[in-house]
Length: 117
Image 1 (cartoon, rainbow, N blue to C red):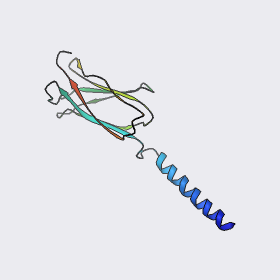
Image 2: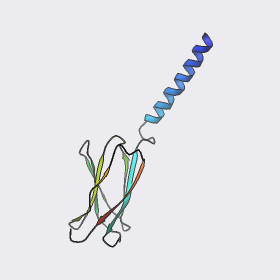
Image 3: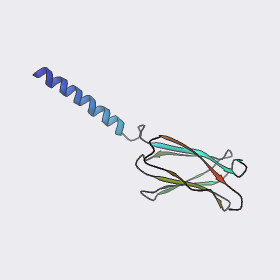
Image 4: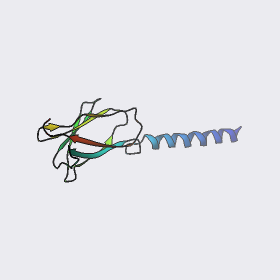
C-alpha cells in the first residue's frame, strides 16, 4: 500500500508542476501580433499608427510603423478578442479581429490603407 501512495504522490506532483509551468505568465500561452501597413499599391507606409483594442478591457495600444511599414504587439492575452486597424494621414484601413477562439500564438496581419478613404 505504501508503494501505491508514493507512486500516486509522484504522479500528482508531476502533474501539478506541469500545470504551474503552463499557466505561468510569460509562458507560451501569450500571443503576439505583427504585420505591415501598406498603401493601395502594396508599398509600406512609414509612420502609420496601428491601433490594437482589447474588446474585453477596452484598453487601446498603439504602434507607429517603421520605414518598412512593420508593427508588433507582444504579450496579448489568450482569453480576449482584439480589434486592429491602422490610420495614415487621415485614411484608415479595415478593422481586423483576432478571436480568443483562435488558438494560434502568432498572428501576422497586413493592414491596407487605400488613398482617399
